[in-house]
Amino acid sequence: MSALLDTTLYDFRYYLVYLPLGILGLVRWGCWLVRRAPAALYRPVRNDFRLPLSIVVPVYQEDPDIFAHAIESWLANDVEEVVLVIDVTDEACKEVAARYPVTVVITDVPGKRDALRRGWEACSTDLVALVDSDTIWADDVAAEVCKPFADPKVGGVGTRQNVYNPRGFLQRVNDMYLDYRYFDENAAQTAVGRAVSCLSGRTAVYRRELLLEISDEFMHETFMGVPCMSGDDKRLTTLTLARGHRTYMQRSARVWSTFPGTWRIFMKQRLRWSRNTWRSDLRALSSRWIRRHPFLAFTMADKAVSSFTLLIAPFFMIWAIVREDWFFVACLAAWWWISRAMKMLPHLVRRPSSFFLVPGFVLVSFLMAGVKICALLTIRRQRWLTRQVSVVNGVAVRTSPQAAGSEAGA
Image (cartoon, rainbow, N blue to C red; front, side, top):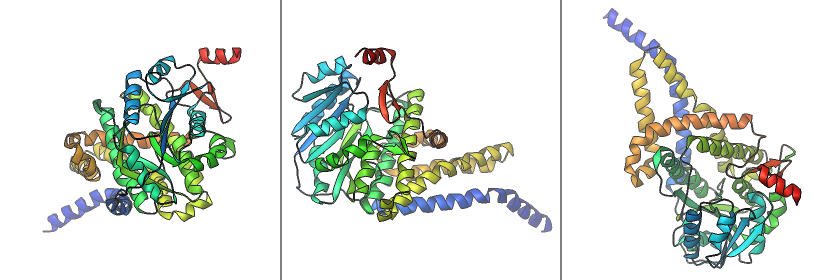
């Protein structure tokens, strides 16, 4: 009896070292439930409300086939006009655009931000959809995105997005991330306060009068007193919220975009997005307008903290392997798989085969936590991923030798 008691006490003390991980896990699950409960109550707006809608698309070195497919999907919707703002150097996309009944604006100013501004200034409709050049719409997107605007306080509306024809591990993982985002974070933010932190630039719809009102602030952004250009979509969303408007996610409006399939591009993209998120969220959390949206402030802070807490679990896993505590290693690995699958249930209902990708998704999540911390440490750095453009003192400049030479000659 005494020997059994000693063994039990030994086992208890042996596993006591993992207690902090258990406590942290309970806290993190509690934070997730705070989001998940209202997210489960989310419903898209259902009505017959409609306003005239134009589409604005900045175009730079897009894949011609994808670009053509996207244009056809936009024209299949009942929109007033499609305005393509094409970079002067992009001859291939000019040729594609010439085949369709669209308005083409040629720009020699580098960067997406100025192209967006030129586009919405060229429109005259009540609503303007800002769309990426590789984004393909369902047939009813234009009708669906108008419905939340029946509420005069709504200034911007986002859509549900997925990866177009996902192939390979990284694209499938991106598709999982998107479903998690639109069935968790965005759904909760919409249900509680109608304040979504980011209306993704792949497709976001705004009242044109609001876009004209915020143009100057959009074009002259600063962070910590220094001119900068963070994510265009995050910037537009926060400017909308700061002016007292609401932002809404209409999940019934579905669009699809291409995503990188190589690790190099994937990592660069995530690093750039993470820097944009840090700049935007830190600025928002220090602003007065965020007080009107306590749940939004909570989700922003929770997202920032999770970048650090997420890396604690791998530390305990490595420690358990060093200790050769294989029982704990097996339990923790199984918990990662099962718990993440539970959180990814909306995606797994749509794609059951993704259940076998969950372990890889977990490992990528740990990697992305490290990327977010790296982004915080390099928060002042700015550069586009797909454009030969950098940002110097808040101004977009071309970085390719050919472009730089032609600009100097001009």
